[in-house]
View 1 (cartoon, rainbow, N blue to C red):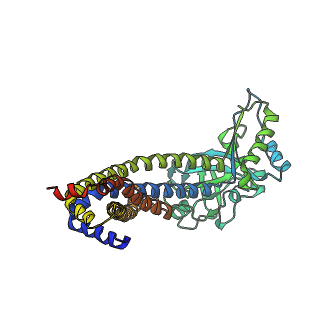
View 2 (cartoon, rainbow, N blue to C red):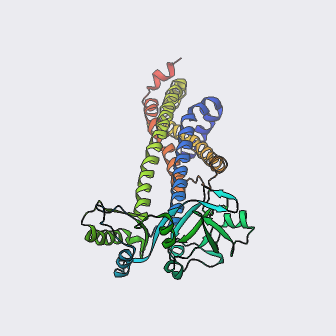
View 3 (cartoon, rainbow, N blue to C red):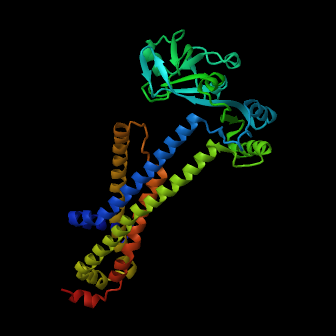
Length: 396
């Protein structure tokens, strides 16, 4: 009996007992579907997280200065000098001062953020100016009371014509000189609900004293760790204490979070894979029952000269076919659930994150399902092959 004949016989036996075969496959179906959805969710989260970090800039270092003692700190000029002294490592720098308290007309906007930044900040974050102009060096130098607003403020409060209008920040009037291109969804609490002012002006109005936050972009994101070390060494020379500052690399943070996500997804996939083992045990159990039910058939075939390897291959192929069919149904189920999960995430969480199973995970699931059928079908097949034909013919 060749492979094709064994496969046809296996498929015929599965069709004869549809419900029993389906229940046998159920563990495989659930396991394969769960693994595909979990891997797809992991891929979607990985892509979403990468996009979020890229929107911030994986070539960015975030510097926080805590200082040493009451008077040991670093000035803005010193930070600019560090960047200028290492052109092979650093590209640009922007101090950062956070404020609140925007008022447009008679309405106060407590959720609108105000960021004091330099003229280079828009290039650092790859922000585009849709109307007017961005901040300029002269604005920083003169501590000008000018600002660039996000698209939400422009559309919601100025009818799309904000340039030249005024708003109040911390009780001080600011003239709007530019409008950012849309960055988020142009709704409240999005990346467009923001105003940017010169950091020198923000520092004076908020009475922060020394500026303690900086954004620094590196020349090569792939060498962000090396650039980070250069910056840390320069700050250590100033403070002689590594607890006086912290430098965070967005690229390193992305790598760390990716590693954590991969570990979590792997653990969840292993837990889901337990149902594959349960499904394999179910296949072995049913195949043992099938051997008992077909004892006389096996006896007749052996009496007619069928060799052990033919009997054994028939039952192994039947177990593998059952498992493979369960695997294919599980793959279809996993793909369908992934599509449903993508829609639910968009509706419930209002985030565009696609649950995308990879081709590797689909092929792996298919291979595992066939492998489980062969593995757990081996023992019943071996039992069937070793039956004594005389005893088998007498079996009732």
